[in-house]
Image (cartoon, rainbow, N blue to C red; front, side, top):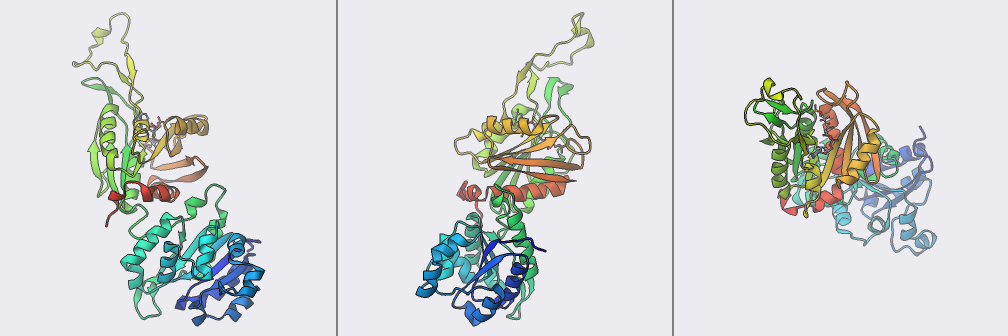
Length: 428
Ligand code: PMT
């Protein structure tokens, strides 16, 4: 299938045993229609020959920053400009460190530093090297820089050990590359990263609001809505699975609390407002899933209102506006990334975009609550994620799987900002 017609892919090869698989990768990329230039490091040439790669790529292989003839034809800066994607397979521990450190003392390093194209790496190394602290630090840097990390796989290793560190197979790498190019404009950051060690939100503090609020009319009656808490609780569970420390600020619901979440139960919008402002102090990502009552009765009667109290004129409730919780968090001087939800019955996108701006949010997730098969109370949901530069529709699925997708997307979308929010939250 021609999925990469005329795509210009620079394949970098660093010096690891998995380099023997790279000619097959290059063949697959070419078969998919891509134009491929191979850049090898000196150590890569110990594992695979330039002749083989020239044959499969159909172009001269580049391996030397100081080759005057090659540089005269297409210098390293032109190579960096030519590429629509730089894919390094295999990427050794040393190569990851070099990219993370911005070293440009060989051709591949110089291209990585000089390119504006997305960079993807397919790590391959011994499992102990993969798990070593410096590699983890380097990976975290690469992910924070928006570099896609594809793999590695777990299994038998060339060194005789078994564990994570095998380069992703060429067929799967091809699929990942096709996926990177399928991203619509403005979405590149959403797919440009994969999970760092410990999870995409490892060491981050995520505060999530969930459920309805109750606004007391008298000691036995209140104003509320149909939120069950299912979506918010599922997002809390997904954030925990992604490595985050989660504070769940919830109105009254009957959902089980996800293991590992710190629950702060609240009743009214004002309770939720106070709890959120306190928790937001050291928060990296704030996700407002709760259906907060916009209004509350001006005064809550301290005794049950009797039918006879209504008299001839009927009973009237004076309502006053509640504080806007998510907007208050977004207005904090040291604000986290702030994501709201929008429950809409009509003109959903228009209203949601207006809320995104009015409330000062980084992103908003739109729910069509006019549908009975999704939204309030249902076990399924379908949403559209909107942020300043783009939008992405996530099709109907269980609230649990949607929650994982939302967390993955948010972690990828805000990877750079999350890397810089409250560094004291990062687990050491
Ligand atoms: O709980 P479930 O049954 O699983 O249903 C999930 C859900 C439909 C409740 C959820 O997916 C959803 O859409 N939540 C947002 C509901 C809502 O109140 O939307 P809104 O458009 O009125 O509010 C916009 C945003 O402002 C929301 O993030 C809300 O939390 C926040 N808000 C609203 C009012 C207010 N006073 N303070 C707020 O922070």
